[in-house]
Each structure stands twice: as C-alpha cells, then as structure tokens.
Image (tube, rainbow, N blue to C red):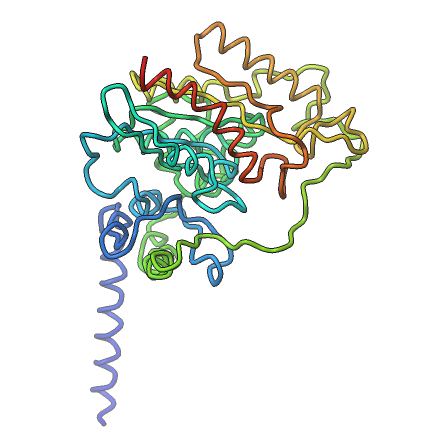
Length: 369
C-alpha cells in the first residue's frame, strides 16, 4: 500500500476526529434531557446516585438535566387530577439503606391522601445525598418547572455553614447554575471560588467531556436493570452503626462556642428558596437526628453536633420561624436512638413511619385549608 495513501488516510481521519471533537464543544447545553427513562424504561423514584453500580444499577453524575430526565417527575405533563408534592433535602430524604417505598416520600405517597378539591396527592423524592443549602436551592429552583403544589424542605444544621455550600460535588460541578442563583437571589457566594469547577474550551470538547458522556450512556443502560428489579442502591446485610461514643472536642466548623456566629450560617438561602417558591407553600422540617447516651454525650449529641452549637442553631430556627411566619416542624428528637442506622441522620423504615405521622397533619392543612 502506498505510503502517501496511508499518510492521507491518517491525516483525514485525524482532521475528522478534531472536527467532531470541536463540534461537541459547540453543541448547546442540555444533552442530558435526552433520556430513555419514562419511555423505554420506568422513571426512577429518586435521583441517580451510587458508588457500586454493579449492585445498585445506579451511579452519581453531575448533569442535573439527566438526573431530572431519569426521574419519574419528568413523565409527561402534570395530570389535572394530581396534587403534586416535592420533598427536597439530604441523604435522609433520598433514603440511604431504605428502599424507595420505605422513605418519607414513599410512605407519604402510599398514604392515599386527597385534596379537598378531589385531586390525588402524589409525592416525589427530590432529596440528594450531601448537605448544602445551595444544593437544595439548586434542586428546588430546577423543580419549579414541574409545577409543584407544595414543597417539603428537610433541614439540618450541617447544611447551613458557608464553608459547606460548595463542597457538594453536584454544586461544585454546576458553576453556571450557581452563578445564576447568585445573580437572581443575591447570594453571598463568590463566583470566583476555586471550589467551582469551570472547564475551559478544551474541557467542553469530546475528549474533555468523555467522562460525563460515558456517565450519561451508562445511566441509560442501567435503566434496563432498574426497570426489571426496582433496585437503585445496594443493601448490605451488615454495616457500621452510627457512632455513639465521642471524644471531648466541642468545636463546630472552627467555632468553640458558647454561641454560633450567625453570619457564618446561610440563612439567606432559606429566604431565597421561599422567594423562588413564590405562592407555593413550603413546609420546613428540622429532621430527626441521633441523640446519643454514650461517652461524652453530655458534650455532643452525635458525631455531627456539639450540643451547644445545635441548641443555638435550633433556637435561631424557632425564633426566625415565629418572626417570619414560616411553616416549620421541629422534629429533631422524634426518633429513638436505636432507630438510626449508619449515621446520625439515617433512620429505619419504622422511624420513617413516625416521621410520616408527624408530617401528614401539616400536609392536610395545605391540601384542605
């Protein structure tokens, strides 16, 4: 074969590859909206998230479009006969170690609630592991396009410190969305913060996006197994129980007490969420947490919280809720210590039932005012 011919073939092939590579960078955003879920495959009952794809038929990715497109909330237009509730929050809402039907949203959805106007209540799990009010606000802001009638926002102190706001990978890898939130709601975040990943031009090409594109493809392929099994996380028969003995350290995010510096807590993100919701009612829930009776439990409630810090934040929440007329449920001590699983905020199905029983009356006040 002629050497010149081979050279020309290689050069043309390289030129074609570079052209395709550059073309990908010119494609509009939103490729993740193209999904086989809710058409060929069942929509997922909670967002894609997972680290053991072989057992969970799931994976974590940073494309919010793809996450929502895979979710059952994206299954066509909202029916006229549906009263739609969305629940946002952390891994306790998503349901670590819980099957979808065992979660807060799963049990609420199975409660067969009806609005006074005859609409049937449907409840959607939009929780996502990692704690950050910025993450919650980003999910809430996106979810408004699905026309919710009621929002339940599950909260805990660990999502409030400013130094936690950009640590969630889903936040750090959505810099453009964070920029938009900063602009629209005047948030006290720095767009130049190095925690925000901002790929350059080459990072937007085919080579630069190969991991993200591969994740999109894998998510579609896992749809086959999700539809067949309903499994979206692994359920180990044995796991490390939540810590109940602690050392004597009582600092919290660099603060030693006896009171929290409120300027270091992102209360403005709650106000932004309420602003975004507009006329849609919001129920805020201070989620249950482990109250240990182990070593140094007189100093710490659990691994996350020194007593002084949590007590001070909780008092702030109660005072703000009263002053600003928030619809707020303070359920921090609802669940017995033996009903927590592998962390201070993850609870058993039986404990979720206790939570459901406390939340339903507030829902009924909204669906039948």
